[in-house]
Length: 334
Image 1 (cartoon, helix red, strand yellow):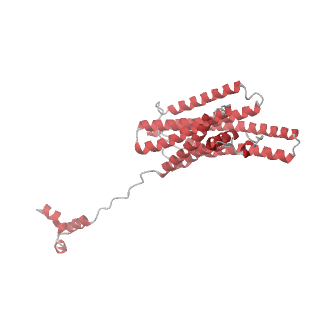
Image 2: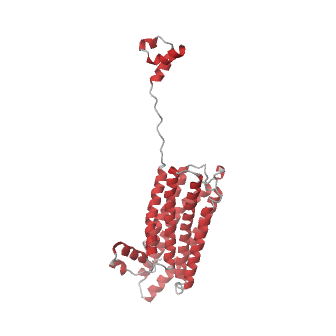
Image 3: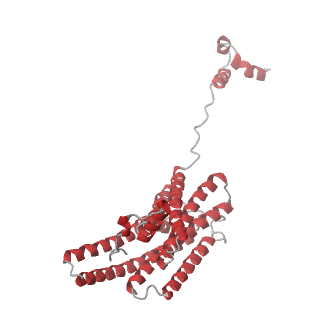
């Protein structure tokens, strides 16, 4: 009977409630107060949206470059093969970022995590290796200018492509083959499920490749300056003309190398010193500029090239602008 009284107290008039015990009054009042649900948390991480958007832009931009080189038989020289390799790697990286976003919110499983991170690591590794291969090719084209177009150069280019893609695929397969931190979270790096050792090896490898690229670009600058000086002497140019040409070539190389370092260096150094215990916002803040490198690469290496520009105009409108067809290459176009 007491239990029934307590249950029905909330429905009694006010004068009945005043005659009841304080405990019953408290129960009755609390039952009349509406329950307010807590505010729902954000379903989608804004950083993931930004990365997915970056991946979409990367995919669209580099798909155009891959299509141009694939459809044009004239673009089969070693330089264009390497630019195509860079565009293909960046295209796969962009697709990897999109797939990572889809799997993270629609199909969450350990297998999808391993496949996605493997694709992203392999793609970005192939992109960085392709940049190094392009640097080597540019150095060879200047240092061995007379024999650059020989059959030996084409064979060497194919060997570089096989090695860089083979190494990148092997690196991407490491998480799938068991080198991951799914079973031991204490070994995780800033990007799960990569281990700290795996991330450290990738970071050190990047620093070594950057040092090699820096050395090669220094040598390229010296060759460009020497060539520009020889051309100036042969055509009796003024010293100011020689200075402008040389400065333009050096500035171009500085932009190429500076952009590459600015995009990748923050994430590389952060991966060396941080682990999974660090706030994820730092990972996003350093990883996002690295993806921007794949957005900038087509602008620097593909769309600035006259032959690719001509092929692009032919595909779009079936004609080549007169300003583009009359433009001549200079020693600064390296």
